[in-house]
Image (cartoon, rainbow, N blue to C red; front, side, top):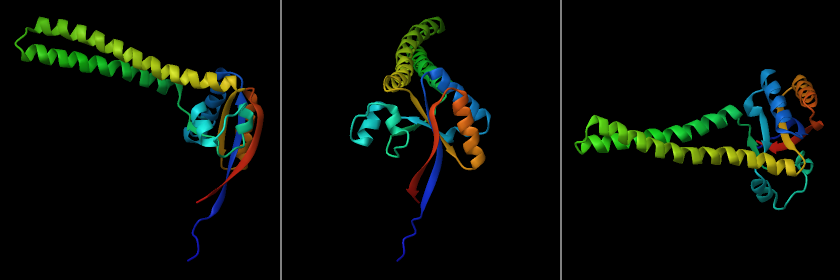
Length: 188
């Protein structure tokens, strides 16, 4: 039986940035110019990259054209902020609601329930705040790791020669280094 697998090439623009601000500026311009968030990928956390490669890497530039380099999807700073807000708000709501339920079920007054909700909500906010800081810290730690290895890598999936030109122009405009195009072969 003949194989139905076909090989294909994925074309990408790639470059690295020396600051998070330059990277974010390039991403914002790419999104504003019609690229989809799903067409952007960043280098994954150092541990994931080294696990997939099977060895340590010195500079992010070594990984620009390596199809085995572990990647992650672009997540906007707004999305990280939304996650932080949810991590703060959810424990507050759960703790306050549980406190009100317990106090009212045990025959407590509404005033006691409000005081209990405020106290429990404060504890929930504290727990949520710690969780939110962990989300923000993890994001910051990944950026710091990559900057220590020479920069922040960004890959942009392109579909047409016009996409390629637009992507490389935007990466260069935002001080992207070693901006170039490459193909990654795969099997479908």
